[in-house]
Length: 108
Image (cartoon, one colour):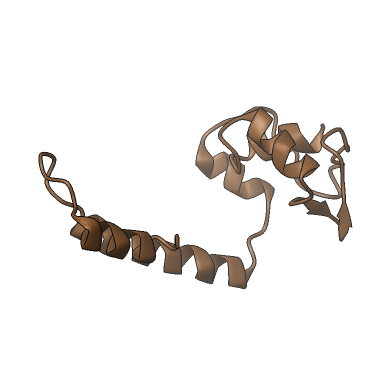
């Protein structure tokens, strides 16, 4: 299975094109080396899913590091805080509110 298809199948990216772009841009490494989108994944490298299924199946195909889990939990906490600051549907945040939301979401 190609690495771009694998990234799509295990739900790291919403589209295969986005996965291929990330691999081509050098953001994906396999066994410590930069790879091309057509690089093959072997069962020894990672679990190979049969299809793009539910997230619970996809999560069994890779191991998440402790650092990654901590970053994800920190991001989730920031998003919960930012969700509480979002205005009602008919109201838009002012300049100060937009800056605060951007800062909480981790954008400049």
